Length: 168
Image 1 (tube, helix red, strand yellow):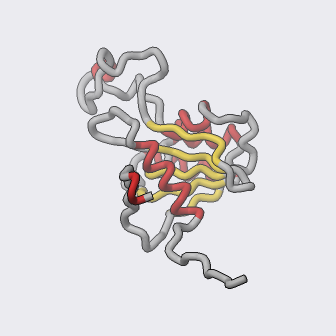
Image 2 (tube, helix red, strand yellow; image 1 turned 45 degrees about the vertical axis):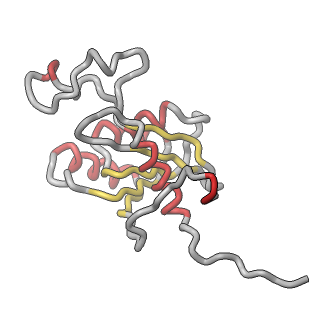
């Protein structure tokens, strides 16, 4: 039997799970910010995904997507962040020692949900809101609760997905 070598251009686990988070973000209808999240257990199995959007039953057409204005005229009191949706959409209530992959470093509200759910690691791409009080609070809570955070560093810049049958 002739041995064939495996291909060497496959993506890493981190790239794979962050890719799922980024793909999930494409479901968001938010015109300014699209975030996705992917929760993975120790066996490297996806146990939850989510993206930022309004709660089930709340109209994407009737609620505001504005970023500025009076609070009730903005998206902020209505939107569920990707991390919270991934936790609520999880296939198990046991997220103990899981890892969550998310494009943006979590806000303080999501940090509380992450901590309470038992997730032990947060992997993120961007920390562009690092100077906000919400993210500063997240970092304080993550440190105190022993949650590991790490910014994903990969050489991969883009990943193209093709739906063309002859490319599969």
